[in-house]
Length: 402
Image 1 (spheres, rainbow, N blue to C red):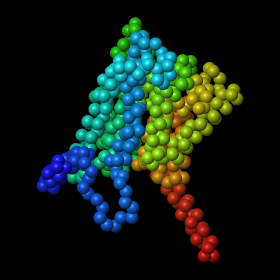
Image 2: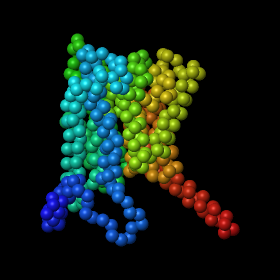
Image 3: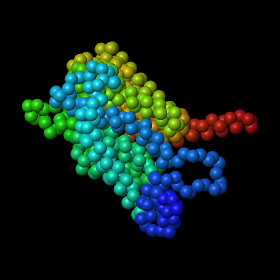
Image 4: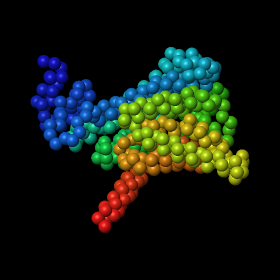
């Protein structure tokens, strides 16, 4: 008898036990589910929630691996062990074991805590409620380590994950019922509960916090942080595009994020309408700010000048805008569902992201708040889109019967 058959027999034998949902989750993770639809179906397909979640995770793996190399590179660069890159994306100074080793041992615990705490709570709720474990947290568990600083204390991350899963998801009924993106709920909790660990120029480079106040202190200010202070940016455009800059673990490489987005579009999981409209919204807001600066309305003495004068297309390369647009704004549960609604939803995400980025120098990364805000309004957008379609059809019907 095969292992799969033995496990299935064990599952049938213990049907009705409280702990069975936890066993079923492990069983279906290792093997294809034995349950199939027998009647009443209109569409039959091979994809399921688990396959969809795993596809999104595959799209993020390059960002995770790059983040490990970049965490080590930024650390060694800040302490003076290495010089700035000269060989472009494939420069030998970046892809070294020393860089990977530092990043791996800093980021791996973040992944373990994210999945350990999150899935533990999922299993607990499944056992209490007596339903199957939902696979929705598989993507959230990968997103969380990619959107936090590398040195975030593990206990803070654990508390935030517990808050995000319980308050941001389970209280609404679990996967498919939540109105807010769970990963962004976790990040929002971290930012407002522990702001000193989520902002400033010391949290983005490993070792900077421990050395703060010492003669050899490390500064790892992000490009957004520099622009918010009206400081000159020393990183090149290609550094921004490739990702050789300080920032959250997986949000720095626009190149890899774009490749991940194209993969999701090709797999018909990510919405190209939301991605494109979000970029258009950011571009429009950036052009408006550039026009205001060119018209002389804002001068260099203004605290808004640094970000407002930033070239409109640079906004697409810096901060977490690209990552948020590709992997979180397109969340099929919390985003708009109608095609026209996706255009409206995405445009407002991009537009509001740049607005918050410019007008709130204390928190120049606005994509998180923009997506959470539009998560709340997504059902309203869809409602009016549907009502508009109904009215159009009613008018056509009346015209034909008149």
